[in-house]
Length: 127
Image (cartoon, rainbow, N blue to C red; front, side):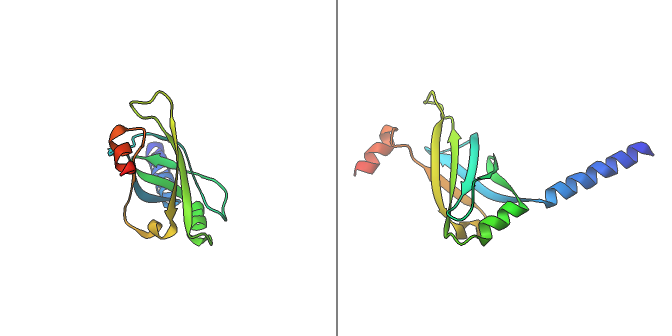
């Protein structure tokens, strides 16, 4: 009987936690490869402070309150900042990307980042 009660409490807690988070489907591609680890990811805009978010490949998890702040703020765009460790670089690379707010209403967002340190992309930028 006690085991059933514990299991029910855990299931209820998981359902409650899931209901309090909003997932945004977003995939970050760096040099045509998915970014597997994005550390210190923060979202901000002109009218809201920094919001710390969790990035799991393909998804950003936000609390309902923070999602409402993003949707209801007066700014037309928001910024995503994060650090990524790339295979050819010794240190983490920092990125800051500005995204229009209406993208939050899309089912899926794909962000393509091309490093001009890479010879292939450097040629394309110069042309």
